[in-house]
Image (cartoon, rainbow, N blue to C red; front, side, top):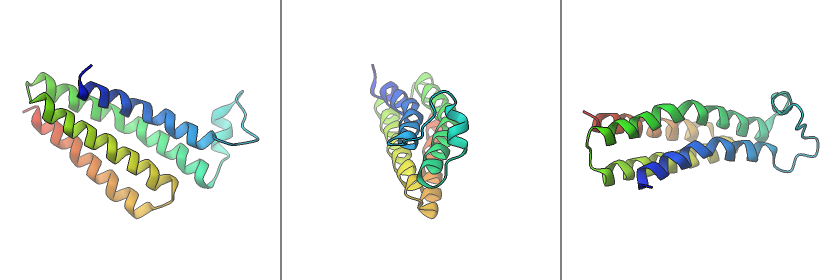
Length: 124
């Protein structure tokens, strides 16, 4: 598996990490209706769930950018570097979200978007 493909896989798993953060240690977790349970949460759990949703939203745009850059014949090592930077920024984004650092979260989100746009630019 190439490094860029591995980065895409890791980015695809980040929503599951967020779900784990939201559910970890909950005594009243309802596995029969987890979405309804999550909808009732507040604080850290609600923010982790919101980070999960945002991670799911960001993933297709990122994955397509990586695939298009590679398909266009861009240097695979450079694509991988940008892809791993996106993953690192998403991990930082999740940390900022869970820690309720809204301004930093927005800055990191914008940096992640810039990385994805850079990957699309590599496809031209």
